[in-house]
Image (cartoon, one colour):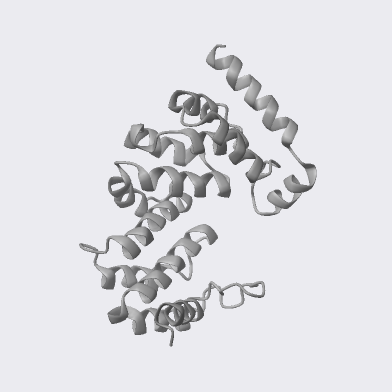
Amino acid sequence: MTDQVIVDALLAELAALDDPKARAVNERHGDDHGVNLGKLRAIAKRLKTQHDLARSLWATGDSAARLLAILICRPKEFTAGELDAMLRSARTPKVHDWLVNYVVKNSRQAEELRLSWSADPDPVVASAGWALTTERVAKKPAGLDLAALLDVIEAEMKAAPDRLQWAMNHCLAQIGIEHPGHRARAIGIGERLRVLEDYPTPPGCTSPYAPIWISEMVQRKTGS
């Protein structure tokens, strides 16, 4: 079969899996597909890694197809320019999040893109840069100026658009969780800005309000 025939067959398979109830739930969160993610992952497991097919699926613009593309691509084969273009066209939250977490973080260009995206005027793009910074705060903090990051968060997070605000808040919490020397300041910033203080949190889940988030995670890590 030609690549286009395979793509068409996969689009038809995904369309057949689209559940109107799931779509309605997803649409409330800004997404535009109704495919059960477990079933989508099963298709990816069947296909295994196929980078050229992933490129073709991404090019369709269909969100379910793009999620499938993310699962079967080779992250290290994308150039920085390709990843930048992909991120700017990934406007739904799930595609955006999967692209950053499954592809960009595992690419060769993660640090280059972190630096360029963090200062981007598009808040959705900037949120991806902050997500990459949060990853470094947790796993590779050497070379990061954590105090300077806290300065930016303190000055800009309160007024930031929702998705960027969420990403900056995650970075604030991660600094407080992972770096005891900055913990008191991180909690203090959270208490002053009160970002996500009233966010509805289901029972058994941790609040995204940074002071609570930091305290709960530190308690889990230390057992005290």
